[in-house]
Length: 116
Image 1 (tube, rainbow, N blue to C red):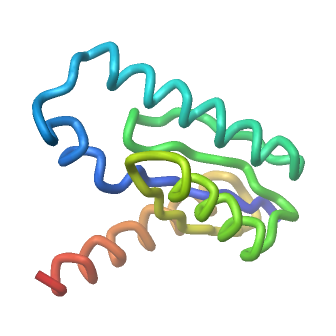
Image 2 (cartoon, rainbow, N blue to C red):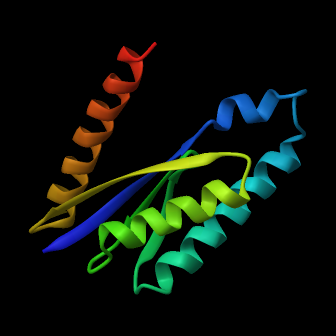
């Protein structure tokens, strides 16, 4: 069984222009620091994080439970000007786990849209 976690950076767009448009270097520094921080936290639990796009990351998280995910999420929320959301999928193959993740991501995005 392979467990994977899709990590979505939330509130990133508004942060890039509030209170004024930020320099490209500021954006890249935030992305690099966030990636390093997530990699460090997941690696401490025997996980591994990969970039997909700069507002999404994909992690191999076998054996990392929901409470560990929530602890990492809170840690990021408390120390960064953005937040993250995560979806976890587990399947027999990485491909199937990744398909489950993206299905959950679409469902989550639809739920967010209904709130507005």
